Image (cartoon, rainbow over all chains, first blue to last red):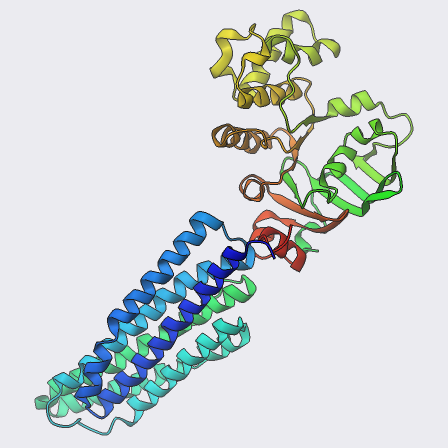
Length: 216
Length: 258
């Protein structure tokens, strides 16, 4: 096999993106657990993971720079490099939004206004979308990517229904505005995370088929 | 093969079922391709794949090789160039060629360019204009206009190659074949020739063989990939380099073999 070093670099790039993805999955999952259970200890542990995501993102960027500058990837390799660059940016945003979620438990005094049933459901779907989009990236599966992005509609529906519910609650009882606002931000973060998962799915479709499509 | 290329709207060169042997060794196998007019078509593939042999069929340069036998059809502007009554000298005027190593004649810059037009009967009074026009078209005039009576060998390698391109253009061909025109040149000279080739396509049909895949990607509109005498894939350059249809094309351009 020729270009051994090059192929190793490509494999390293894919691995690094998957590592960042795995970390994003953990941060999203733990931040949701911490906010639902108002678990300050778990929230703090989650916040501590952010620098690790920065290091991985940096490593991916350097690998991509080296590949483009020194190896001039083409065809499927070029698509891997382009999609890895975009996917890593989306994953880093998912980490950032999840970190925002993990900051909420520290701001809520006493318990939640209401059981977070729909919000938890949003979190579960977002986690499922993230896991499947990463799997689609790993296996270059455009169908899985498209199916995964379709879940975004469910997240959007839940977002609007919780949003309306919270606005109505605030209108009735202005004393809850502070707590309710944190929950509004929480659902907004989840909705954005689902959008970033859709972006990952779009990159996977490009990676697998060279087609540029919009999925949300 | 990619759909875009099955029916070229304006083919200038049409090749059908071309087979070529050097003695017992078959170097081209059933090659069929349509090369569009006023565009740059690049031929890539590993050494010995038949790409140079192929372009040498387009102006019958292979006729000069004794053991060479050709079957199939090659037509230019609808005319079979291997048909009876074809004047090979006229054909090579219509289909010019630039080679890997610059090969100026051992005479002045001016005479290098004037050589072809003189043979083809251009008037002495028109000759100067023809020479200047060719040198300008080859983006060489500004660099050497004050010394066109100097020996061609006083030019740098890159300038010599542009001189050879100017010499080719001076006899007003319709098609110019380039066989690895930059492989002996430095990056700056290479960039100049590449820029030149891209500008020339408005007046000429350009066919180029290159080992430099980035060069094919940079300058060509269409790319053909050859492997072991066969045309494996022919498509728009963007598609070949972003999403080739054949695995062997992808393996070659990404350096997995070759």
